[in-house]
Length: 181
Image 1 (cartoon, rainbow, N blue to C red):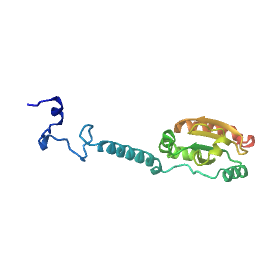
Image 2 (spheres, rainbow, N blue to C red; image 1 turned 180 degrees about the vertical axis):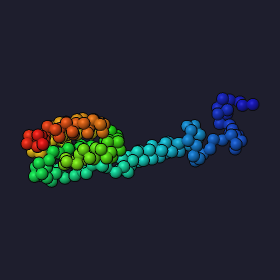
Image 3 (cartoon, rainbow, N blue to C red; image 1 turned 90 degrees about the vertical axis):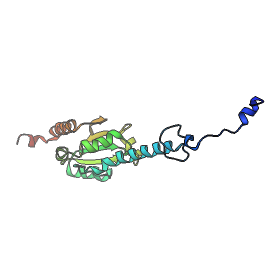
């Protein structure tokens, strides 16, 4: 029988070993006596991010992309071909989705064969973003062969919308002497 409340708090308590919470184990539930569940959660999140970001690179593009904008613009002027500037970032979900669902399609690649296509990572080329007034990715900017902007689209664009837009622009760029043949 305790003589004072202080003795109650200081008295050793015997707990059977089977009733003690696991220490240093890998229990993923809070309250298991270990904080390893936080590490497991972080590991799972990191794995999901890694596998989700690597999916875009595993899908081959049906579009031939240039990455040197100056060389591509010079090539467009010389060949009198229009230019598609694709602004993107590796962390951008809609950009990765377009890689998988739009640029991997053969019909999109065929539609863009007559264009000079330039892929610009905004994180690597922020001055190019500024030059073309791009604040959001994905952004598509379509230029004529002289570099004059013809059309701009901000956000995810489906394959159908992209091919329809490219074909409409192609019709406006057809020289008059070729339109009658």
